Length: 252
Ligand SMILES: [Zn+2]
Image (cartoon, rainbow, N blue to C red; front, side, top):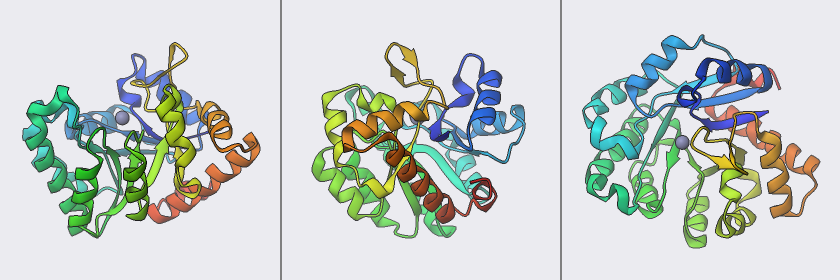
């Protein structure tokens, strides 16, 4: 199994979920929501070569954690990947949007300055600002838009700008999500769970729910589950190679 975006540290029984992910997954990307959470998680969970833990600053908590921005910028220097970062343009977070823009552009600028990083990006109702920020700092690295919910035009723009897309079961909960999945560029899609935030059929999505994503993508793309699996594994290898994750790749 493979998971390009999950919050293992936020599950009620985080240590058990972590052990489960190590046992079942060939690759797990654990994105954190703040630099302090990154440090705590890196300290509490024992390092494992199949797991990538990255520092982030989630747009939903930027209002409370703005003062951790400097810490995040320092951490970016020494990590291969960054996330979860991004922008949330929904009404609920409108009061922090200016702050979110400041944080996200500083982060992307830093990634640009240090030669590029893989970045797991939240872009809910803010795709055009996310893309404009990425464009402003072109050497930012590899942007991976997680749980993309933009318009078809935004999807086309993001693809043209070289974005990757991580998608999980919860993206298929709505008709709009299913329609978007159909239009994703097949060679730039990787699986994610976004657990424990994501729900699917009345339960929390787990980091090893890869096969559910495979089945749903198979329906969206009219492909056999086996072909979807081959496609996702091939995409994963390509992306990990770009990310410089050679040690993880050696296990494929
Ligand atoms: Zn997330």
